[in-house]
Length: 338
Image 1 (cartoon, helix red, strand yellow):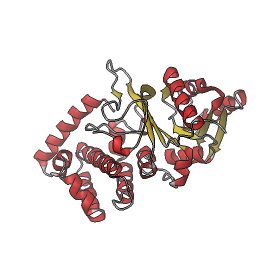
Image 2: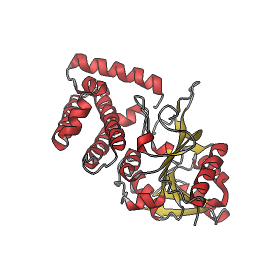
Image 3: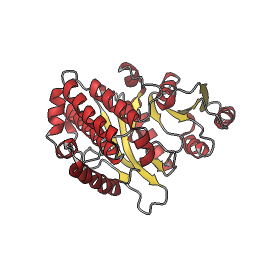
Image 4: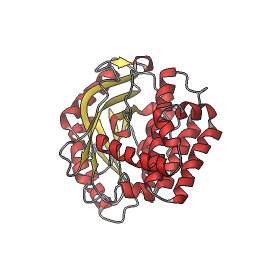
């Protein structure tokens, strides 16, 4: 059995996937790299096959009809044999030294029979052309270089939450929770992180930058204009997270608090882009989304509505939307996420 399986979803990725895969090969034979060609129409399939032929003990090439990012992750998980599972998008890459440290932690957890459910590290928003690269770290909220539970998790700052880039899950946990991402839907990386959280008991955080999250292509899913164009996809994911949230099923109160804040962040993102669009139909969708939350989970709606972000974003009208747009721009400059 491999120590770590890494799924690399690829769709028309020929121009940048080699940088990603080459960085992952630094893990050596303990790592399994599963390149999932999601119905690409360029040279992605050929490149994937070449890597699989050159590194047969490390790389698997899997080809499928186009099912979207979520289905590619599902395929990666279904083909994984590693004790732990990670997703690395084909335009991103990882740091060598941090990679080795993470592998050491995973190996040690198995050797010492520690049932490590989630391993967390930092990532950097590697924004093209930006002089200052924003690093997402968790040293203020999580114990460093030790095992811990939800009861030892501290306070997360606004916009500080665990993304797919930060997390490595125990493969068995993902299968135990029945994780399956929806097909043909963008932004499902949020579901990938969110849905397994109630099953997580033991965590470990190391304060190193492992993942380089590239931002800069015009067609990238997090590009502002693309997010507005695909706002219905964002709303769908937001609603799926609302549907999944169940106060009675989440046994750990700190976990419940974190997941509640995660939904709050998603409501913020959805609302912000609906307002940024300056489209009257999208203003209606914003209202409908908040009503969906209210009807589906009144307790969660009440919790979120009483937060600063909830109050600011729930307001409607021309003046409120102007303030919300300004707030988003300030927030965007602070974080540097797109």
